[in-house]
Amino acid sequence: MSYQLEAQAAYVLHARPYRETSLLLDLFTLEQGKVSAIVKGARSPRSRMRAMMQPFTPLQISLRGRHELKTLTQAEAVAAPIFLKGDALICGLYVNELLERLLQPYDPHPRLYVFYQYVLNELLAATDIELALRTFEQQLLQQLGYQFDVQHCQSEMIYRYHPTQGFSPVSQLSDALKPLCFSGDQLMGVVAEEYHRPEIRRAAKRLMRLALETQLGGRPLRSRELLQGFRPKHTPV
Image (cartoon, rainbow, N blue to C red; front, side):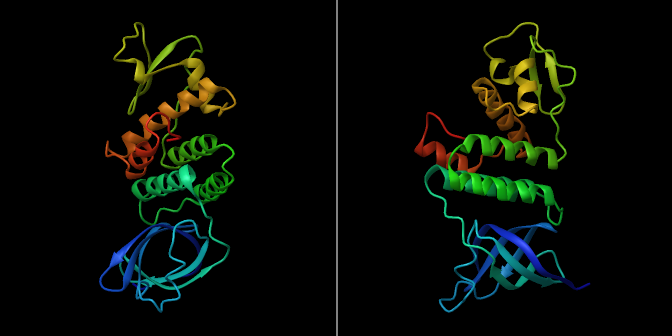
């Protein structure tokens, strides 16, 4: 059965060469979620699409095809590209890599699309990168069906995080367990997004990393390794 999608809002998550002159794209679209598509001739010097097929450019695209891998037939930049630099650029690549790795094809997430636009604008402003990333990560996990259940946690108690079982009380805290443990107050603060509190920000970064590593199957993120290469002591991700 033929598939055709017209005038769809989208961003490029990742682009790589395909055959002699084409590109293979992973796109994040408003209505269809993650979609993979070929852009024929996009690497040709004469191609008008060449400059547009970059991350962080708001696009309107049209696709067609009978199989999961579509062909991009039309594209138009609907706004100026978002030019990120430094840490903000690598964090943008980190967000793109999370979406590329974790989203299933043709699984729509319109709410997440809005938060993706939010995080790009916050990275551009560069006023509070960590706040933007934690907010986006929590929204991404929720869209993947993963919720932090803290309704039975008590603020003064310590809990161990289990990726598949949630949080369990810890009676004796060892050095080996510390990276996996949080106070009830920290957990409730993360869920409530009380990121004005420094201790909640630190806890949120640890917790999001643990949860996302589980979703990623333990495979490292290229963008995180890149950022740690530049800033080994402290990174936003």
